[in-house]
Image (tube, rainbow, N blue to C red; front, side):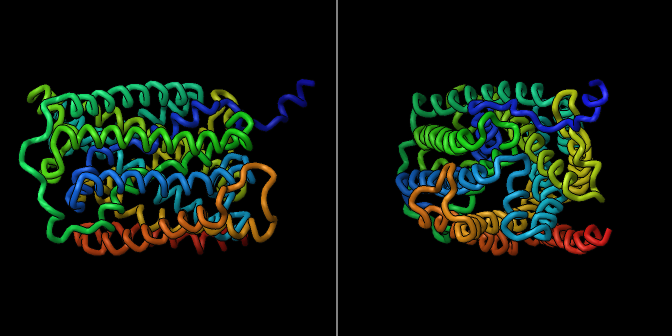
Length: 445
């Protein structure tokens, strides 16, 4: 009996409920973007209605994607998410390059990007010198990785605390804007010269980004075939509602022109109500927001690396699941180490956050588009699934694929003009390309 017990290989356990999954999505999506993007969006629209409609459109596009991922997750309810979708749609080569890119570019770059936001605002509260922002960023990565190493219940509990704190704080900012003195009397001008609705939509969709991370926990969700659609759709609806309320608060307090002129809309709203002391409160709020996003990304990123290691003997050490705490310990350690390398590299650029965005964005949207197309591949091969089916097929997945294609084009076209970060764009593409010879090496071995 004891021998049989010792031979059991630890595996992911269904410890996550629907509320856990929804909180994970909201925590992953609601990050630094809601504090940066609204002023950029306001600068590219001509009226308050256009401003609101863009945020609603972003929610609709994300909902289309969530419905696509709900069907994909229902077909393959296991830990690994997009890695499994691509493997079954296009073969081992596509999934290998994706997993490699996610491990070295997409997920680690996203965690590093948000860590720089945390570092910049923590530096405002307690300065640590010229490199203080990077030091704080590295400390945040190390601390959150350590919490996740302790175990999934602990990281799940931390996510609930951080998410609840973030929601309360954002609600307070929104109420301050709605119930405060109101927007300045000066009317907003017409659409500014050079304004671009397409550019505005880029930042709206970037602010909505991250909901797809829920697909990586399907193997740890109770009854995933039934509950993944609830998690994905519920998370998107919650995020959309939160964004609309927060932006209403911004608009009520500052007006469209005030938002255009603002470099930190949330800080300006709180400063208008609470005076200069509000700057510290906003810094704390952004720090909490950043930690919430980072923790969610660390949880889901390690799950892909775990699935990667299970399939590739050359990286087999990543496929070890530690029973104590029910966590992919080796995958977490490698992910943390790679993220710290990117934080170190980003600390030598003009802006660590922008360099990490340039490093990750084109690679991210390439694979996002491939996942959308994968749904058509599965429908052609196996027909309609017994579990959840995307409504209004093929319209909904076509909207999602068109959005992905537009964002891929826009990300390459937009960062082309960011001369300072051109090297970061090339570095991300080059690191992704390294996965191609590695795949053939792994096959030979």
